[in-house]
Length: 281
Image (tube, rainbow, N blue to C red):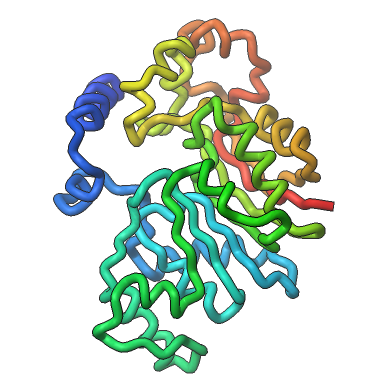
């Protein structure tokens, strides 16, 4: 039975929408596109706790790559870290103070240590009170972070969206800003953003890396697990694979993939998700 909305139609609609020049906040406000479920504070907490479980007890500074639609991480991090830095490729997060003030009040009522804020606080004042810095220039934003400043970093289904030509730069910059002995927890999803399959591997590099496709929220760098692990190791990290998710068989015939992917080992193509722990010795 054919899908009611085939991946080709979804791809076309995403490309058209992304190239209309309408800001992401408009699409989110009208419920058309959104970057995950981070506007739900309970979901945001589950993501935060999933990763922070891998931070060392003495870690004092936190970096999140790709916070998406909210900065709730900064609220939860306040009780555990002295400072948080949240980096994204654009101003995607909700910055109206009210949802953060509501969460602060809720956590304080449960006995958690929270900053003193009032209802008339501006967003800048709220995030200042939370000791949070929000940077929105993607990989370039890491240049604003000092050497060895970060004790713990994490990303949740973000690294596959880093532009292909910037991934090695990201790995090196992340190594630079990580303190000696610091760690990072990174969850990756290697499936396409069209049908949870491998349809994005059908295209040539020239087509997939074209400017009109890279503007869409379905763009991924198409790096596989082995390539990402190699990039981190080349930057200097020790890499441990905490979890790997695999298909039993390829969801798309290898003959239908672009020739650059047809030559890959099946083992690389069968991996559709992974959780990596990186360490700076």
